[in-house]
Length: 174
Image (cartoon, rainbow, N blue to C red; front, side):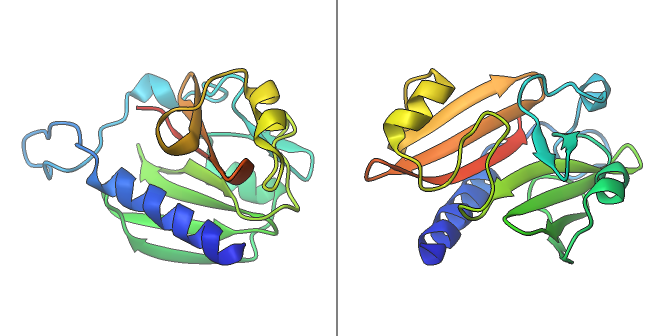
């Protein structure tokens, strides 16, 4: 199961890197993503938030606030294919957060559930049946069995394979 999740995560990461990027600005690399400054307002992700240790957070929230409530086990950095600078990965029990520096602050840009020990606030979890997930999401699946819900600055992707939820991730909405 962990191997399958790793493969799904890599495919989603590669797809994000291969997607067309926003047009560049003078003096800035053409592949950089430019974030609408209004998008980084706290709570702009609507109902698509995540909760850990009783703390609610979501896309574009400041990492320093998240880490004050939810300590990370370890971190890893690597060159970003979607943002300028590095992607910063924080690893927790059952989920991961990717952050990037936006407008001078390190902000959450993706949240990925990595095993069945964690549920979303709406009750989604890895290993649940597609029928149960569909009842929660209330949307039809898109290409390749991926259910997508967008609210404000956040997009929730739920990947189903063989009738079972295999991956859950929150990313910045396009």
